[in-house]
Image 1: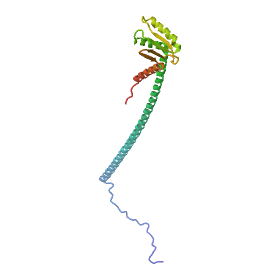
Image 2 (image 1 turned 60 degrees about the vertical axis):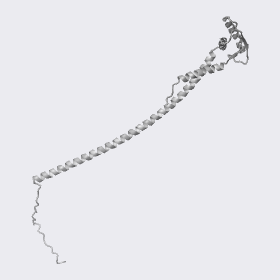
Image 3 (image 1 turned 90 degrees about the vertical axis):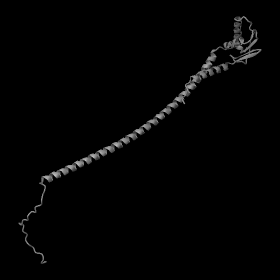
Image 4 (image 1 turned 135 degrees about the vertical axis):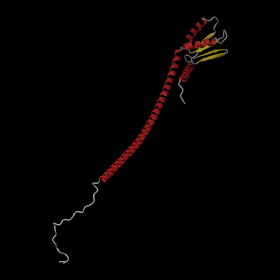
Length: 222
C-alpha cells in the first residue's frame, strides 16, 4: 500500500461554525421598493396584455368587417345578376305576349272584316252603288248593271222600288253575268263605269281595322 495514504478516524463531533451572511430582507425600505417594483411589473404586464387584447380585437374586427364587405359585395353582385336575368326573361316574355297579341288581333281583325263584309247583303251593296251612280249621271242616262244570275230578280225588284220613289225615268237595265261572283257587279254607262268587288271591300275593311289597331298600339320607348 502507498505510504502517502493514511486512514484516520473522523471526528464526528466536530462543530463547524455557520457563516453569517448579511440579509436585508427585514429592511422596510427594501421591502417597499421590492413591492413597488413588483406592482409596477404587474401593472406593465396588465397594460401589455390589455394592449395586445385590444390589438387582437381591432384586427379581428377589421378582418370581420372586410369579410362582411366582401360578402355584401358578392351578394349584391349576385342579386344584380339575378335581377338582370329576371328582367331579360320578363322582356322576352312580354315580347312573346306582344307578338301573340298582335297575331290574335290580326286574326280577329280579319275575322271581323269577313263578318262585316258578309253581313252586308250583296244586293244592298249593289243597290247603294247604283244610288251613287244616279247622283253623278244626268237625268235619263242609260245604265247597265251586270250581276250574278242569282241576283237578277232581287236587283230588278230594287230598281223598281227606286223608280217608284223617283219622278224621273230611270233607264236602268239588269243583266246576268255568270262570271261574276255573288256580290260583285259591273255598272256601265256611256261616260264611265263602276266595278264592285266583294273581296276588295273585305280587304278595305281589314285595312281599316289594321290602321285602327296600329294607331291604338302603344309606342315602344327608345
